[in-house]
Structure formats: structure tokens, C-alpha cells
Length: 298
Image: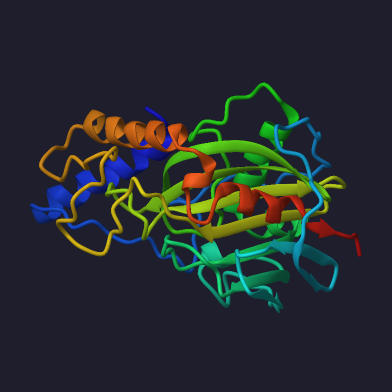
């Protein structure tokens, strides 16, 4: 059993023992690393080893976006535009521990078209060493990303993939994993969902997640964009029927971790078997956006 899934199972068992019943909790989508804070020391962020992924940068048509030293192209039909801003530095003295980060650039996509309803629609560009020095959760994720970039044969499993550092929840699963080169570096993308306890995978919770490092190792890119699948329930109702071809959630009548692990693996298998074009927006569109990201050193 992988360590990320174990955290979810421990969470639901503790809640069950304390309360006698379980109500699934919603991740704090404003930010956090993992349920148990990492205690790793900051790592030195070196330039990643660029491996030849399946997806290479391509020339796109769409809406060009530029702010300070970051630019990208929004593929036609994905969104109407994007607003860039400088996010002030946060420390443990003026914010939650998981929100600790250096000053960085954030883009929010406007008019984003998706059947997924996850609340975050952001592209964040951090100074990699500064983020690693600010927060152990970022240190851990950057270390995991470096390990993947350094080994083209490494399996992209849920347990090995980097987490969103600022989410206060654990990664339930990782489907549609893929290495991607972007204009200024390399990284990995996935379709995933986070939770503070075991729960159903829904279109209200899944999102497209990308993490990457620039070729000079100076910048760390974290992208979170909603995405939907016709094989998942919306998550807006308690007793929604599971779409044909989808996977029923086992409910909260069992405390056997194997039941939940089997559920998440079945969801992963179903989503992996789906065409990238069956998602809304298509994973191909989202990959094109990622591939266009250009970051110049300052």
C-alpha cells in the first residue's frame, strides 16, 4: 500500500472511531501540502535532466499571454484570457505553514471551459530554490519531481509523483500520467483528486495537475486546472447514479483499506483507458498550454 493512500485510510478510520460514522470531508482548496507535514531539509534545486517525453513543445495558435518574465498561449476554445499577478511572500509568521512561499507569479484563467468544477484555475511560477527553502512540502515535491526527470524509465506512480505543495490533503490517485517538455523545461502531468479522507472521485474534485522545472533549475511551475470526465459523477448530489462504464464508490460501511485501494485503482484504470479527447477540456488542449510556457531568467 502506498504512503499517500495510507494517509487517507488512517484519516477515515480515526474519524470513524471518534464519531461512529463518516462524513467525507472536502479538501481545503485554498492550499496545503500533506496531512502530516514533511520534515525534510531544503534541497539544492539543480537544473533538471531533460528526457525525451512523448509530448514535445508544438507551435500553437490561440491567445498569447505575457506577464513579467512568463508567457504562454491559451489554445483556442480553452479560455478567454488570463490575468497575471505577483503574489506576496508568505511566512509562518503571517500565514498558515502550508501557505509559506516566496514572492511568485500567478495566473488565473478567465472564461475557462470545463465540465469539472474544481475551484482552482491557476498557473504558479515560483523561484525554485526560494520555495524549497520556505516550506518542507515544496522541498519534498521538488525532490520527487527531480527524481522523475532524472530517470526516463521511472514509473509515474501515485506514490512517486510530486504533490501540490499547498494543498491540505493527500493525493488519492494519479491517472493519465505523462512526461511533458515545455518551452523552457520539463515536467509531468496527471489527472488527480485530493482528499482529507477517503471519498468518491467526482467531477467536482478531479483536476489536471502539472509540475515542472525550467532547464536552468531556477523556476518551479505548478499548474492546477479543472477537468471533467463523462465516466465520473458530478459530485453535486448524494445519490447520483454512476455513469455507464464508471466505478461505484464502496461507501463508508467498510474499514478495510483494500476496498478503498481497489476503488482508486479501478478509477485509475478506467480513466487511463479513456481517450485524452474524452475529457473536458481535452487533455490535448491542456498539454498544448503547458508546452507553450516560456520563462526567461531574471
